[in-house]
Length: 223
Image (tube, rainbow, N blue to C red):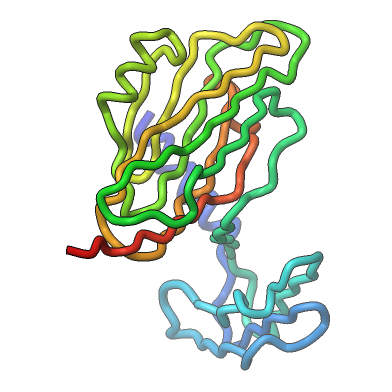
């Protein structure tokens, strides 16, 4: 099998390889040149990196075109990395979520709460829903309060992963709504924004409901 695999690789390389030639590659965004053309020659090795176009991609629809002048046939790949304070929610997600912070401003050492509302938007029981609540920096989660939520049956279990509190349920009945608090202690003065919160079904995590990040301003205590 190893010999056959090597033969296949050599045959593919022989069939697809082309003579190298000098040339250049130019990117166009919506018909306009993006930076200068990147040139290469027969001795060029490794990846050819093109102009960073992130600042040109404002919200909306864009057409990206790559044009090679000269050169010879070559492989290419396209990778898109982006971030968004609040990604768009999926209509297919059957778990509803609302998250708000009781106090937008708080003094160091005081306690506040994140109010969490989870809803089964389906007309049937919902298996294994999950809610991930983004906690702003400067606030510390009270684990004893989360353990009380488990003990009282309001959640099945939880995890704290960095600035995120992950809440698990075994199921939600059709149309069921759950409201619960997450107790937080103001530890470090400053202004903070947490990660976006989201909810989904454990086995269909490609469909999510997203909530805007919650923000808090923590004032230093006067001693």
